[in-house]
Amino acid sequence: MPELPEVEVSRLGVSPYLLNETIDNIIVRERRMRWPVPEDVALAIGQKVIAVKRRAKYLMIETEAGTLILHLGMSGKLRVIDASTPVAKHDHVDIVMATGKCLRFNDPRRFGAFLWQPPGEALKLLANLGPEPLTDDFDDRRLFTLSRGKKSTVKNFIMDNAVVVGVGNIYANEALFLAGIDPRREAGKVSSTRYKNLTQIIKQVLAKAIEQGGTTLKDFAQTDGNPGYFAQHLNVYGRKGEPCEVCKTEIQSKVIGQRNTFFCKQCQR
Image (cartoon, rainbow, N blue to C red; front, side, top):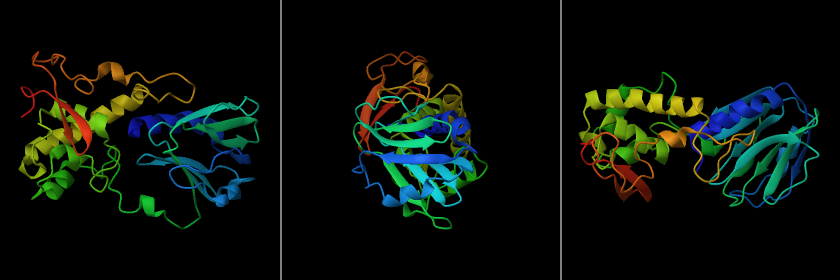
């Protein structure tokens, strides 16, 4: 599933083609996505794009009439192409610009979303979200305070969107490895010193992934069609049975919170 870095890479990729340009048409070929595509998305037609933002894993295309909200789901891709480009299988939505360019949303599994937010209203999906991990609002004091008394694993804790948004499975595995913290440890038993280190590492891991173009695993590609490259630098994720690059101990795997978790039992305590 595309995580925060992949969505941020998409935002950076599409922004130059959308910002301050007018939406000429919105073509919805398939409304049956994670939630039905609302008819109100047509209200964006004829509107100028005044901002392209990201909140957690949601891409937000703002106009004076309201905001188009996209979520890539498990297999969604965005491409900026000429509007005349032939439609391929699973090309469910086009945002056609007056320039002749088109933002095309392809989603084979249809777990993604294409939604509408009227001005001054907030979607319930975006309510109660924690701070963005790359901002000053996300700090070790927050992690330590919220973790007290928590018996859930530290991995599930940092993946909780109410605690901090966008720390998905891949980067939670990687950050915990670099911080030397066993993902199975109870969140409430991690010290303030270790949370301080973990907070900085989460920021570094996500920033590095964005810089390198996002992680290509199965479905994600950058908006220009090129893959991300951070997958080449994964320390533990997807490496069950391989030797740890630090101590040569075999990488272990365990399902935590219905997600595959990878760790080194020697390096992570």
